[in-house]
Image (cartoon, rainbow, N blue to C red):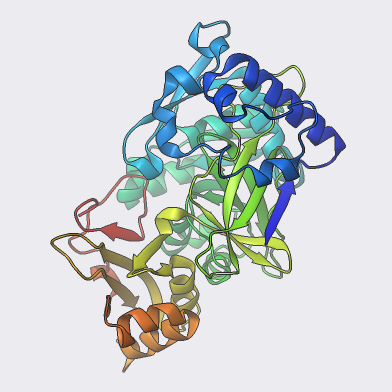
Length: 427
């Protein structure tokens, strides 16, 4: 079963064909991938059927001589270059043109006009420009001339409460932009005098579950959450709005998104393939068709209700432990505050993959909490139970610690609130 969402109306399909025409005209990579395809008559359904052949992955982004169009390589137009590492762990460089800036503005515009176009003061905790997140926010807001002020807050201040408070007291923000988990942690840190003025929380980069959203909104009583799904390659592909009463489905305004079963038996999780659609006359820096970033969409009643970032999944002997399942358990539990996962992947030195889930409690450790969490997790994910308990091909350890010890011996990365630490890579 598959699903196609986004710019699939008549004008969207016309722009998609224009995008493909420009890609074939200027880019060696796509000339090869689309060999034999009629670009004038292709439809999103055809694109979905071509994912085995017409696709691009993060590792392909290093092949700049093939994937960058000739108007970038030569160079025929002005562009800036954004640096990102993402899923590959190595820096990739993605060209970003004036038309990308306009396109980013269109991606952001629906929620900007409704929630922020009123003189808001944004405190942004994204890394310094030209980070991709900062470029999209800064460039997109500027492109549509939103009536807002954008304050770039030094990301080091997240580790220094005194400096952070001094900065925010001066800015008096009405909105904060940050990673998903950072928003929750700020809710635990900031005084009520600052939190009560926050009306919009814009997050991304990490999975946001209903439980974490509810916990965050309880800390910011006057706010709504804009949950963005984005990447350096395609800016903000989709977004949803979460209030205390409901969460909307994900909206994909400027891209065609193909969602397909990954063949692993998880029917509610679909693999995401992104196609970046240009408007007629535009030249964006990086044409993308069926970009397989590795992320998963969680589908309910034919709609995208959540997106699981690929770095938020660990494999236990073939069974997948999804971070959103752990989040649902931890943030829905009255005695638990937070968690991290320490992952030992399969390797010649480690014949059994192992995940250690550290769960953090408040003042007093709840009796039997480790086994309670284990059983709740097994109820949510029977394949993990089978691999751990029955086949014994993997290990799962639950360890309860006070909140202040949750991240003991784990590296601190500015601006990055990690949930999964991989032994041998992150540790």
